[in-house]
Length: 415
Image (tube, rainbow, N blue to C red):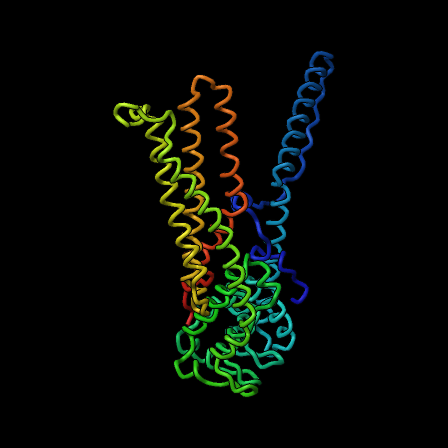
C-alpha cells in the first residue's frame, strides 16, 4: 500500500474547471478489437475509389487524433484510466485488510497516505477497518490528530462520519506530550501547506479556521487543559506559535492598504475636479452644461459620481485597516472583510473612471472616430491590468471568508 502516489487518485491531481468537465464526461470502456476487412475488386475505377475513401478516412482520423492531443483529452483519459485501476487495486487491498487481525503492515502506509493527502486511500481503509481510528503513530497521535497536524482538511472531515461521542473521545485523547486535538491545531502549519495560500493575512485566517473548527469537537474543559511538557493551554500555544505570522499578516495588510489608499486618493481628486469641469463647458447665460440633454453627458455624470463615491469608500476601508488593532481574531472576519470591500470599491472606481473619461472624450470629438475608438480601447488597459493582478486575490479572499469553507460537515454518519 505504501507504493501508492497521490496522483494515482482523483484527489491527488488538480484540474482546471474545463478539464474537470472533460474528466467527468469520459467513460472508460473495454478496448474494441481490431476488425479487418478484405475487399477484392478487379476494376481499376473501383480500386481508385477505395483508395480515395481510405485517404479521407485516414485524414479524418489523423485530424481527430491531433485535436484530442491539442485539447489534452488523451492525457485526461489516461489519467482517469489510471485512477480507475488504482481504485480497483485499493478495493482488493482493503478486502484483504478486513481479514487481517494485525495492522502493523498498514500503520506506516495509512500515516504516509494522510501526510500526502490521499483521501481515497484513507477513506477506503477506514471503511474496511473502522477500528483504525484509534491507532497511533510514534508520537501517540491518532489518525485525526495527524490529519490536523498535516492540515489535511478533506481527511479530517471524515471525523463527521463518526457519532458525537466518538468525536469527543478523539478530541480529548492526548498524545505522549499531553497534547489534545486542540493543542495540535494550535501548532503552526507545515510551511509547504502555508506556501499554497496567498498572503500572510490569509495564512493566518486559515490557521484560525482550523483552530475554530477543532474547538467544535472538544469539551469546554479541554480548551483550558494544559499539556504535559510546557503546561500551556491550547489558546496559549496558538498565540506563541503564530506570533510571527501575526506580524507578517499585519505588515502585509498595511502595505497593501497604504498602496491602495494612494490610488484611491488620486481618483477622488480627479473625479471631484471633473464634476465641476464638465466637457463642453457651461452655458454663459443659464450656467447649465451645454451638453446637459445628451445621453453621453448623463453617462459621464453618473460614472463620475459612482467613481467618486466608490473611491471614497475604498479609502475609508483601507484607513480602517491601517488603524486596526490587529488582534488574532481580527484576521478571521474583520480584516478580510475590510480588504474585500476596499478592493471591490477600488476596482469599481477605476472602471467607472475609465467610463467617464471615454464618455467625455466621445462628447468632445465624436466626429473623429478614428481617434476616439483607439483611445477608448487604451482606456480599458488599466482595468484589465487590475483584474489580471488583483482580481484572483480578491476572489480567493472572498471564498476563504464567505465561501462554504474547507471542511465538509455533510459526510453521512456511519455510526
